[in-house]
Image 1 (spheres, one colour):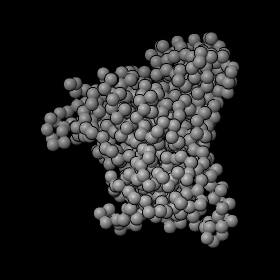
Image 2 (cartoon, helix red, strand yellow):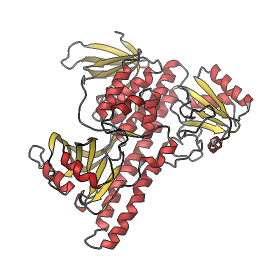
Image 3 (cartoon, helix red, strand yellow):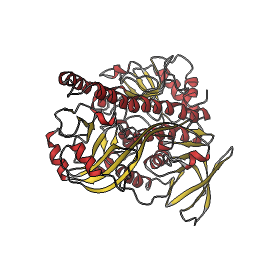
Length: 528
């Protein structure tokens, strides 16, 4: 087996293996170091967004992912919130991610993380440039100006060897040894709240919940819990469940009455066959930087947060989609170091916004609501406020539109800010995800994008298209052109020329270049 790779990946969870897939499809050699040879059966990372499913489609595994789901085909993916317990008269089940479906090329999906990992592990077997070192652990990591070295062995210390890479990415979780070794600190927000995780089977629960429309997540909010949710999630139908809920800080898992807490949340004497019980701590932790020279961190190694809203795995996969093409560009010689530096500049602000404004602020809003309104004090006031919460929940999905407007490697608007807040639009805007529109040949514009840079030319001047093509060829940038008319809905892009980078974000748009096209390409590949 070889001992040098373009990229060494420490950690073979869904983020690490996803990175290997993204690099392997680009012909970049990589090694994945992962202690686990078998997959954990604890369900997490279940809610996969439309954006995540776009990644799987481009990696050629979207059908396999949908086949791997444990829920029945067509079963609703959404949330329901109840006041007090699940038998309450006060509940709502508003629209969720379907509100932004038109801006993405795929439907969202729901399956446990171990099913996602299974599909990705199968995919890397078909990629000749990917080497897997399952059952191995990464030891000491060092780097110099030209390479990264890492000690690898079996967990018992046998079969020790040294491998090197041009770059290394730590995808080794919230307790990342890679992050600690290179001295990256984290900023934390500790909620000082202990939570229960229970995994169980219960036909009783499914029968009682038939009073509601089909949903995959059932949340209970109670004044006593200060905004922290009790929530049930379906693993399969009819009887597979997980449950998260706050518990007193002095609780011990060995003696805690988990069944009693579940019965309080359900509002009836449900029976449960437990498969797993554990406690975890509510906190947010974000690395102060995502790169040290040739070493990067991604996924939970870079940012960790509570399982509120389905942001964890989806953000981790977005990290590696952002990073993978930039690593490939530098390995292949057409990208510059500034491109790699933009990874941290683009991804960290998105996660801070996610943590602050879509997790912490939601807990605070729920706390304020529960303290302000109570049906026992003023039923009419409570009912009016409860009704108003439904639109607030739906607007959360509409406001969550990660973008890189302030990135130095694209042409964002003056005063633009990188973050998770945005407005979904079809208009092609630098720093934003390209929305799909039908093309004249029957494809949609998103699915037609190439693996490199793509220029959408809609009734564009042929001389401008030729200038981009020639400049890309001279710079050895992988480049494709899609020519079409600016009609039949495509006028909604509001531009004749739209330059899209390999992670499907627009980097420049306009009707005519306002500067030399080689300067545009130099900036978006990190050379300026």
